[in-house]
Amino acid sequence: MSLTTTTNPAVASAAAIPKVRIYGVPISKMGMKQTVAYLAEAIEQRNPHQIITANPIMVMAAQEDPAYLEMMQQAELIVPDGTGVVWAANYVGEPVVERVPGYDLLHELMKVGEARKWKVYLLGASSEVIHAAADRLRADYPSIELVGIRDGYFGAEQDAEVIADIVQAAPDLLFVGRSAANQEPWIGKYKEQINIPVMMGVGGSFDVLSGKLKRAPVIFQKLRLEWFYRLLQEPWRYKRMLLLPKFALKVMRDKEKVTKS
Image (cartoon, rainbow, N blue to C red):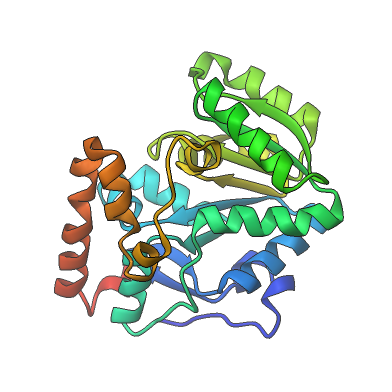
């Protein structure tokens, strides 16, 4: 497999980002610092990007659903969020620089955005959670302008209304926290209409920001057991978590074919 490299990822085009393809899903090899620099440049250049924070469950879903795989392949940037994705890249001899967790990427972008007066739109979760998350972000990043806050409980018949509100608000960053099966396809479907620099699914980040859920302690993060800590808080997720060992076994079985898809 050939990889395109660049001496300055911050100003590279999406096509030039160094990547490893895991079952056809193009995962960025850039670390956190490079990723933030690259996206900051995209914002300054008003260059629309869909950012996906990939984990093994999403990669497995893409194997079962060709439309989901196509959506991921058309995203401008996919970062290695899940530890299983980082492990898989290393296992097949195409290591990424480091894990780039979506929750941390959100905060790093907000830090840069403070100095640059970026505008942010929050979409997802319940009304109570999204407003509590907004309050937390206002407190932590007072120079950021939150130009839109909306819960994620709306159907397809309201999509046009939601999109119109985002377009009118003209944010630099849109963070979407809906179900894993919904948020990325929704962004992918409407990103050309939304047409803003950063459109990123953030999963349960709003729950953590709001205080509804606690982020895994550092020891769990270092042991790569954040998924287990979340399972302890949300045991109903166990069926999804069963895909993690299936992914690992699949990668080990298919080692020579993982990057050939």
